[in-house]
Amino acid sequence: MSARLIDGHALAARLRAEIGERAARLAEQGHRPGLAVVLVGEDPASAVYVRNKVRACQEHGLHSVLEKYDATLSEAALLARIEALNADPDVHGILVQMPLPRHIDAHKVIAAIATHKDVDGFSVQSAGELASGLPGLRPCTPYGCMKLIESTGVPLRGRHAVVVGRSNTVGKPMALLLLQANATVTICHSATPDLGHFTRDADVVVAAVGRRNVVTADMVKRGAVIIDVGMNRNDEGKLCGDVDFAAVREALGPEGWLTPVPGGVGPMTVTMLLENTVQAALAQTADRR
Image (spheres, rainbow, N blue to C red):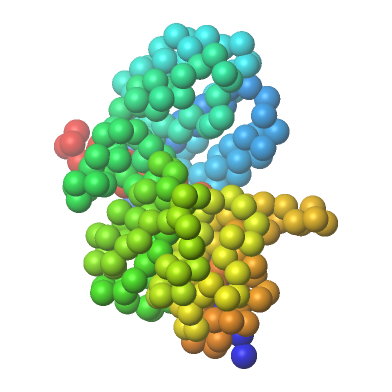
């Protein structure tokens, strides 16, 4: 028998229903959670991502502002617009869709977003809060991965977790969130000489490098939990992850857990963006009471 699938769509639906209820309660008090999404340029993938985020907000009672600008927008103009959104009491979260045009410094843009409105959790201060164990807004994809692991009922305390990938947006914050849950964490990356040596010993593996078949059947332990963050295309053009899905699912056995691609981590990323926006609204409206 093969591993059980972790259904990201079902979990996202349950969490979004709860988020919608909390947003409605805030709206009744005159504080409808608000998210501003800024899109610069005409990148087709970014346009799709932004559309999904805005629609999710609207469907769950959040106020969403979409601001679209030509790729010629200057860095100074974008920074000025972020400053205005920082000061807007009706906007509780600000998301600037990446990538930005080459003439705009993404680091400057992220740093310009007020930390209490940084619903992507990408700023240096947000990263510092996470590393220090302080409360704050967490990067959406790792946050969603933690919810997926939690849904299996597998305790993380004392377990060995391996994170494959060291990006600032997924790998590093994922490792820190696992540490906060009292897992023993190993981070692997492109310079790791024998990835399988580490993953075969892991109770939990989070694969987040963006390359097909990084994790294969001979690299996993029976009964492990595998979270596949990758988003790639196979030879037929179909979406696939970083994990050799069919073979790994069999190798894990019926005690194991595995996220599909699509339908695993993807729905959770947008869900946690909504969660962060509601959290930000709660904190900001509490400060004004």
